[in-house]
Image (cartoon, rainbow, N blue to C red; front, side, top):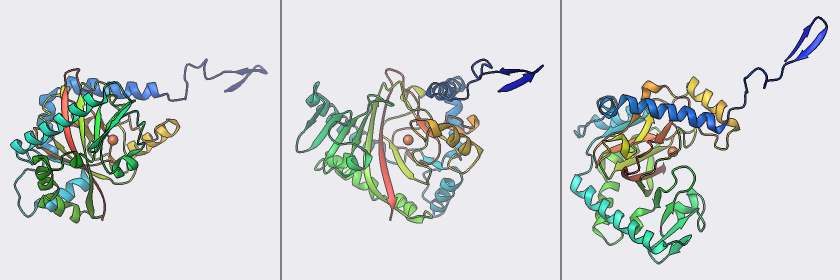
Length: 312
Ligand SMILES: [Fe+2]
């Protein structure tokens, strides 16, 4: 800024005015950390009560499909608690757990290990990028680095469970009448493309609020463990944030100079929902809305089956 006082030109730099216009990753991290602190202050009981707003009961009446379509359009999310029978979920979870422990042992301290059943890798040293991992003919246990460090994202988990009881349970979920009817009834009808499983234990640092894309992208989650404590790292969604709004535009503006152009740290706090629900619960959300994984405590545990969809 230039000022002309008594014919003496003064130049005031931005540094001297104590305001820097460049937004850093640290500013975004701090804003996200504030949201986490505020959620912790409200506490789990507050959010268990609040989740009624986005809950679609299990009752299978004929209006449920249109209700679900409406919820996704208005709120970008809904949850159906205890959608899959608990005994099936426990069996599925145990199988996934035992395979992931087995492959972790086989990996030892190497960067990757591969056999006829699956690949396990660190730092995406063998197969890179979501599309290649999803298209790989075997299951891949991808150990995340960077944000969500240590989380295991199992691509094509169904291939890992071929020939086990888990295959049958997964088949039942994938062919569920309600899910398929719903996907078919969306404005852009979808089909199920591939299945992943997230294995999170003590993941204390998670990526802040972000969108996966700026276009509608429906994703289906089924909790394989009880996520009834904030310590377990619930999936956390900002209701209605999939719609165009000033928040949307502010976030796009703020993150345009960031490495990831999809960070969305500015969120209406009263619309934030950490999804606290029992195992077997179904969560469907539009990933163009702001979301994140809540940071776990060191002993926190969460297992999830994720179902990815694509236009028919
Ligand atoms: Fe995401």
